[in-house]
Image: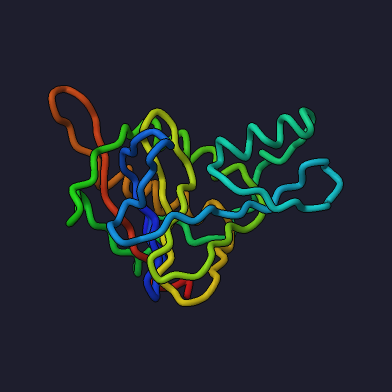
Length: 191
């Protein structure tokens, strides 16, 4: 199953929530470990894929240093299930049991946009209880967590973006004249 906070538990899940700065970074769920997501990236535009780790923003910066002419942020072919057709995806809005801080919907949209442009497959190490921060911008993050006992790969990075988009669409609220979003999304069809 899939979750955006992003976590897996015989499912995978995705979370959209606010995070603290990388110093002292903690998993979004107490007792979970932070793992790094692996990105398959064609750095030199020749078909040779390199495995890079970090958030989409960190990988973009690394690729730009390695090859400023890289086209790795190209239009990815969407292989995941579109958010509107996700009948087996379960969205939970709000702070959850761990009182997650809210995120800015526009910053989550930025992460979704970047994820929609990356080719390759995201891979996460085995759980249970392993979370990877996929995107982080201005204290607004998309996490992917794995509760499976095995490594897990998704059809595309767009799959994570689709889950985050559902949260951005279904879990936004206004407080003190500001838009906010927080929640998690579980998906069972990709197991």
